[in-house]
Length: 62
Image (tube, rainbow, N blue to C red; front, side, top):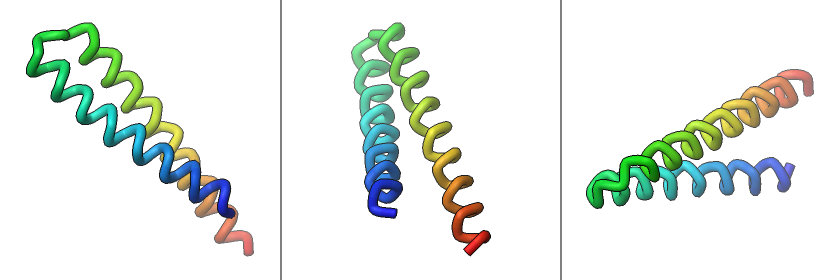
């Protein structure tokens, strides 16, 4: 359970840092980097949703 909580914290940090990166790169006109941060934010959100689904099914079966 601790591992999943730590993963959730890591995914949240990834989404937050990617969000800051998107705004930074957009304000500085670095549009390829904006695309990179959008992809990484999408990846972290996808992983987070998969983790939430897994936790719901685990808690439902208990």
